[in-house]
Length: 262
Image 1 (tube, helix red, strand yellow):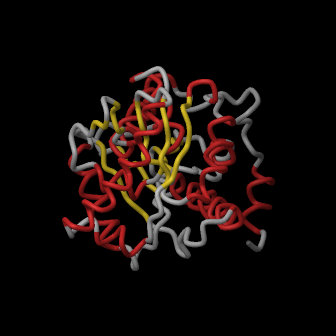
Image 2 (cartoon, one colour; image 1 turned 120 degrees about the vertical axis):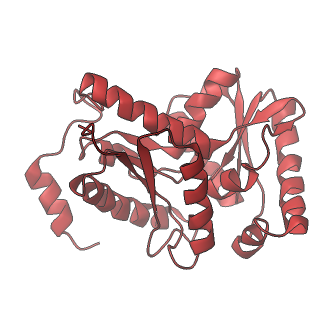
């Protein structure tokens, strides 16, 4: 539980490299600082090695790293943990090993979208993630309310330039809007940029509306979802149900995992 005389600490786990993408980390930290409610501090952390190969095997490796980091966050006194990666690998396992609230960027964004419109669509940063996101939507039980998943073709250096170069930003924005329009035609009322990179890039537009559909600011959404989860945890004493899906792992189970070579 959060002590009343200290700020609540929320560990925000990004999946980019803390040094190679240091400007992105700094921008993300700045945005979170600007929107955090009084008494809450977000602490952004990178991943080394980062999620760079766009493959399920890499997501699996990142999941193992993130589980370890969530345990580290809890032991370091953090009060909540955010998986700041839309695919949110390890979400189920992390909720089963820590007692602090755990919020996933993808799940929080989709839940918020369902309160803002009847159907939503996703635009990811690479076509390889389309199948992943379709499975993710089904896993969360949202398949009847998704209009589709589409992708832009973003190279990381070009995407990073878009944060500081207006011509690069305009090019990325135009490609994104091109993918949004078919989703809106298919019934999407809310569109989610499926990734922390595009979410942070488009956060400058407030509101961002394409053909009447709202483009969700997922960074702000997951931050406020984490704050709400933290408040509820303080009020109720429970972060998740231990009845089934998020049954707590035993100490032996956790120690075996931590002692394994990954």
